[in-house]
Image (spheres, rainbow, N blue to C red):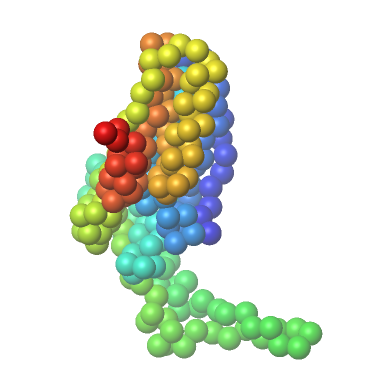
Length: 215
């Protein structure tokens, strides 16, 4: 399961809101997080009032067992070479130690016994990639996905200033997002209310077809 903590952020516009900061992203448990990452929105606070974004330089682990991908993602792409080598060496040593000492807990009667992983089981662990910056992670993910499964996005707007009308619009968009397995972001501006949809190109394409006028 993905692990995150909830933080409060105060935007320069005065809006106070919560956002999630991830330490571990598991796209098997949370498939939409793949597209949050591809959109560059992981560990980022997006103000629902003015649309301003604030990125937080938080390292995290990205796991996608379907593609044998396990990566430590350092948030900054411009880490100096010397520091980068130190990070790589430390992480590889730590990961090797974790895999070699990983244990499985088996229930046995009223107690349990601890059994170390065998060499063949340890070999099944995916190698740890160390990536610097979200763009490098996105390049790796896109290299594994088919074109239809890569990131797609679409923005839908209403220019109504009515709070009730905007609320109804958002309810409809949330329903579409759930049905199409997309996630949404909202930009609530005085002259325009925008809902952004993110998901695979296949899912976003299906959404566009569902919303297209029928003659």
